[in-house]
Amino acid sequence: MSGRQKKILIRIVLAAVLTVAAALLPVKGWLRLAVYLVPYVVVGWDVLWRAGRNILRGQIFDEQFLMAIATIGAFFTAEYAEAVMVMLFYQTGELFQSIAVGRSRKSIAALMEIRPDSATVLRDGEERVVAPEEVAPGEIILVRPGEKVPLDGRILEGQTTVNTAALTGESLPRDCGAGDPVISGSVNLTGVIRVKTEKSFGESTVSKILELVENSAAKKARAERFITRFARYYTPCVVIGALFLAVLPPIFDGNWREWIHRALIFLVVSCPCALVISVPLSFFGGIGGASRHGILIKGASYLESFAKVKTVVFDKTGTLTRGVFTVSAVYPEGMEDGALLELAAFAESYSGHPVAASILRAYGKEPDRSRVASTREIAGMGVIATVDGKEIAAGNRKMMEKAGVAVPENTDPGTTVHIAVDSRYAGRIVIEDEIKIDAAESIRRLKAMGVTQTVMLTGDREEAGRSVGEKVGIDQIYAQLLPDQKVAALEKLLEQKPAGSNLAFVGDGINDAPVLTRADVGVAMGALGSDAAIEAADVVLMDDQLSKIVDAIRIARKTMRIVRQNIVFALAVKGVVLALSAFGLTGMWIAVFADVGVMVLAILNAMRALRL
Ligand code: ADP
Ligand code: MG
Image 1 (cartoon, rainbow, N blue to C red):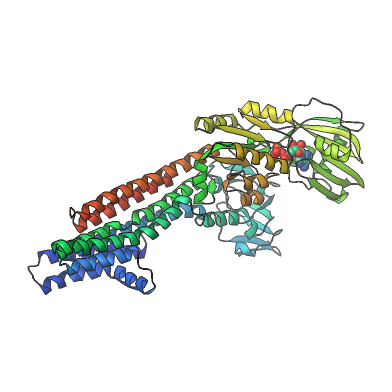
Image 2: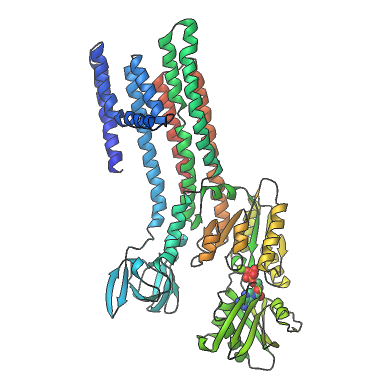
């Protein structure tokens, strides 16, 4: 509990004791009013103060206003105890609410713990502890066991295990040593490492994630906007209704006191706080709960659209497959195996594509970049580079067609990288990818959850796409697509999706960022370290397990169910109590009790979303 919450609690307890004392005191008339005024002011002065201030600012129809009017009205109709009880319940509800909000904030803030406080940088042979913002890319930092890695970089020296649990939700620590990349926000567990930083703090993964989480609250879901709009019209309507209730019936029966009292009860009950609070809190909880699984959802509106996904479209490389190719065969035409691999490695040395990474790994050495004069990447095809003054083209069949090189027929399994030197065919390298272990199972579970369409879009060859798609159980396969053709294919799928449902695209952000943006919900996976993907996507999966999609949909649906339950429950209870109060069948403090009760239950329900 914060200091402010403690103070309110003390005031509530004190006022409760004073109210009991007031009830026991045998005083009458003005004195009785005075002894009840004391606890009333103790517990409610800030509500009165804020109500007054808001009236001066022209915001009348808020809950403070409702409470102030109702309780002051109760004093005028000599219902002293009732007035105090109303304030007591109201403040108790507020306290509860602030604790609940604090709780769910904290669970998101657990993510904030990935934020490193300092970095130990080596400058002129000396260790210096500075703020992470002050470290430039290319500097060398020292990370000891137990410390957080402050910036993204690569290990120069040392051997250790790192824990990325806070980032990915994956609790299995990973071994890494010299040459391996490390990501800011992960925790260094066992060894001292020297890391050469590759990005500034602002560009590092940890900053990107924090930014994303902080902004997620701003994107309101439709349900949430509905509630705000609802409250704006609802409250004035209720106030006018109460006014009629206070004035019209007594014209006929002359019982002013009774009808004013009923009108005041009506006012108290009308407060829509249970809805106004619990709906955003449920979304907040859902986002927080998802983040604990390493699923970052950029806003409440995406939770809402995710819940309605019936079509899931996958990218192949890096999404359904691991994207870690191994070279399975090299077919050079008139040169050595090694020479062809070297040419390919040089040509690919500046590419960030998984194909390039695999060829470089197979080459096994650091390519001598001084021999590479220029490179150009053609998305969905391959690269063209100038190596030792010769023009090297490396890529798929489309790449060769574009370069005007004839390609001999082949029946290679897997993905083929053709290589041409100065427009003459030089051979091909066959690489094979592995299907992710949880791919088939995840597709099966998606279908069991009511996802009716599963689709694969790939830039790879028809055969390679089909072989993967059939193994994992994808319904439709579209192959040999360039990035813009992927967008066109997605547009068509968007037209065909079942009415009222949504389409999610799952990709790795390489050659598919435009598709990520175009889909109803764009999901980037294995996005650690890929800024483009983090930026383009609506939902970011911190690791590359496909089963996270299943989790994300499940969490989104449960959150929406909680939101709906709260809306229906609160409106139903409100309706009943409003009707009862209009007919004089309920006292004011019972009305408040009902109101606070609904709010507490709605909040408790909302908090469930945190644990999904
Ligand atoms: P996917 O849709 O399967 O993720 P991409 O659209 O990224 O694939 O790429 C499509 C195809 O283009 C790859 O299968 C590969 O044949 C070729 N390609 C793309 N980039 C490169 C590269 N840097 N080197 C060689 N081939 C490449
Ligand atoms: Mg891809």
